[in-house]
Amino acid sequence: MVQKGQMALVTGASSGIGRETAIRLAEKGFQVIAAARRRERLAELADQVQGITPRQVDLSDPEDVERFCREISNLQEPVSVLINNAGYSIRGALEDVSIEAVRRVFEVNLFAMIRVTQACLPGMRRLRKGTIVNLSSIAGKFTFPLSGVYASTKHAVEAITDALRMEVRPFGIRVVAIRPGAIATEFNEVANQMTGDLLARTAADYKPVYQASGAGLGKVFAGISIPGPDLIADIILKAVLSDAPKAVYSGGPMVEEFLGQRTKLDDDEFYRFMAEKTGLMGLKV
Ligand SMILES: NC(=O)c1ccc[n+]([C@@H]2O[C@H](COP(=O)([O-])OP(=O)(O)OC[C@H]3O[C@@H](n4cnc5c(N)ncnc54)[C@H](OP(=O)(O)O)[C@@H]3O)[C@@H](O)[C@H]2O)c1
Image (cartoon, rainbow, N blue to C red; front, side, top):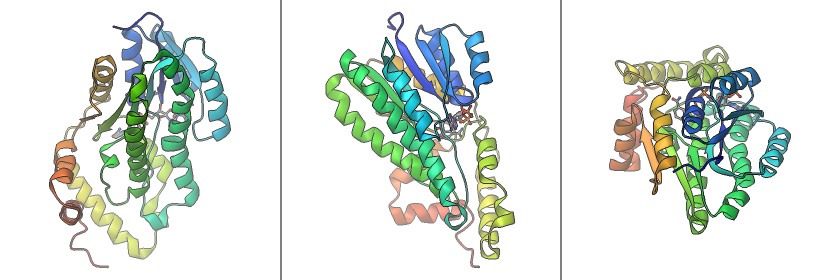
């Protein structure tokens, strides 16, 4: 049962999975801090749903993350439920991704996630309870071509989540990873924006690689209906409210096929399967 005034923090609460999760937690009686950059979106959410407090933070800016973490550490009522949800993706063959873009996506998806978790842990230890939910992805367990940088942030999230789960178990703190498949949010639009026009800037050698894998992935997605963020927010709420949450929850399309094959096949077999699926198996340039 949720105790009155119990604090939850949701990062990336201005849209998609984070927004839906913040609403569900507030409806269950949590006092929810909803954090993101877009102040108006957060203010609108706080107006609509009782129990939500907006907090602006840019998780790509380490100084702003420090300021935010000081605020979190000084809360009278410590955060007992932390949903590390903020994140985005960039795409591109490794040669085409600037190192600045790589650093930035790691700042948001990994370093800020670590820092915010560090800020919440002392309070959870004092309470001898807490739940930390980290948004990974199916790309936390394998990678699509042209997604290696994003997938590497989520592989790192998986490792941090697994270590932390063991480290804080003695204090009654539960740590959960969520692995969504494709979910209809602003995620794709943001990835397109952050990536820019790859075909215009890549070398001629890579053009067929982009084209073949684009067509391959197009086939993978054809006929799949992509669910909205409610699906994942419901799973997160279930994990938070459970007396004994699972270590990992997955949900959404492609989970069974791709994660299923990842566990069934050995590495060679799996990456042959992926090269076939993504149209790169027979390609010679
Ligand atoms: N949608 C999918 O298919 C999918 C699949 C697997 C995993 N995921 C993971 O699920 C999580 C939520 O994604 P979503 O699908 O809900 O995407 P979304 O609708 O784009 O939401 C992303 C959230 O992250 C916040 N965010 C991004 N950059 C930030 C920054 N620099 N500082 C603070 N907040 C920032 C955004 O807020 P502001 O822009 O207002 O800052 C937004 O609230 C992500 O970790 C994503 O990697 C998504």
